[in-house]
Length: 173
Image (cartoon, rainbow, N blue to C red; front, side, top):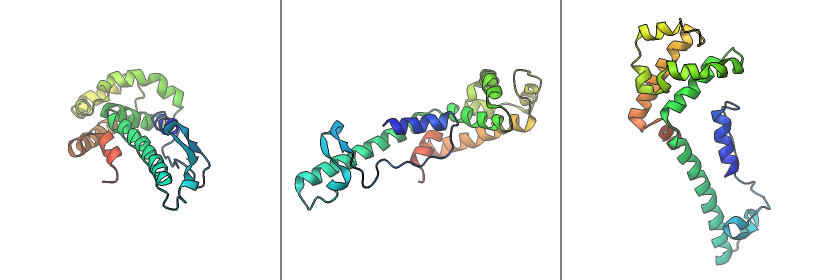
């Protein structure tokens, strides 16, 4: 559970954009006392049709499946405004010192209406152009416009899939 939580934090804090994670090495000697299974996964895979060993193997598989389901539930529960904020922050960080962007981020949250996709989509060109004068922000026209464009794409995903979190959690369907 901890490693899956760390993955989410790594994605959210932009420590990484790609994750590959093996829940357990196929020949792991790790037991599962937290779920009442003293044996390791690999030896249990050689159960020889012994019902008690099959039951323990099933318990481990169910445990791993439940961990992954909780991970997907956390992805699904993340609101679209947080996905848009995270995406936008990464765009504004491109080519700049992260600490510079991070220090200005509260002003971005305010300027882009909390990054609520429907609200950002509704921002007019005049409202976006006014942000070019806001000294609290990074005033890059292309990056400022990208927030609205990404909000529009995210709103479309929300309409079709029920939200960005649902889209990610249900991928590749």
